[in-house]
Length: 131
Length: 175
Image 1 (cartoon, each protein chain N blue to C red):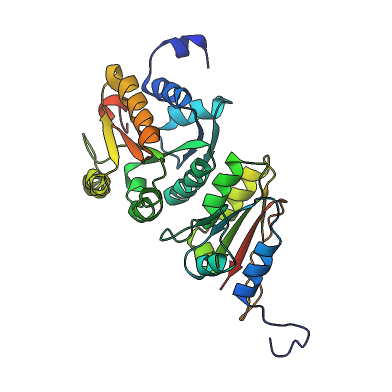
Image 2 (image 1 turned 60 degrees about the horizontal axis):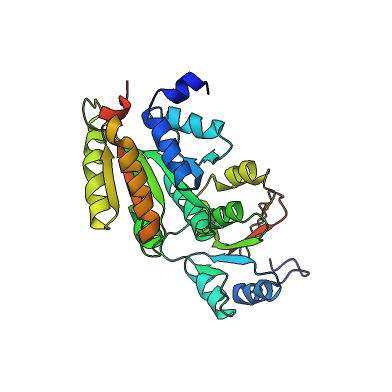
């Protein structure tokens, strides 16, 4: 990182606030276990938030279920990188399944140690991986 | 599906009808040979949105999300798959009182050859009981519609998960 002068370290809580601040259409947000949840709460409670406690790894599957039930609503899952690793085959499943529904974009962003993008390419659900 | 197959009562036809009667439209599963006719029947019926998940807990998460968003769903799995679920049942489904339905095809009893399956099978009902999750074992065709329908009705009326266990007595089990 240090040798790349045009990069800067993002702050997870600040980024969560920024994402939540962009929501204007009653988008559903599923907070993943731990800090993803605390940051979501700290960004200001919304009725459309679900704070998932305990079932590590399931924020994105829950978001997928919401997207299936309400294809017109945009759905976001905030997940940690460890949580993403817990449900390893989720991305292909999401890709295959939500293609006809057309609601899912998963982009995983990881920082501090490295950057990682997992982009499936469907236009609505945005999965933010933070650490 | 031919009309002859529709008219002959089958455990999977009865369950599919119960799902329709209770507006359970989302069917997620981890593949299992015993469940195959139920899975195939759901795939063939446009009433249902049916797909496989890689893991049972993932399927539970998807159905939990859909249920909270107004679409009822069910997870189909085998006994050993159910055994992977205690954490997500306790911390997500029971804690948030989400009426997620489950169907488990029972292995580990009535002629099981695999000692591992036999032991896992003994953990299933105590796990369900410990969380207060209503469960019924379906073993007879003549009781199947009543058990399936009433279990679904109660799950949604009381907003509590429920599990139907399909005995080899009903399904014929693993060949």
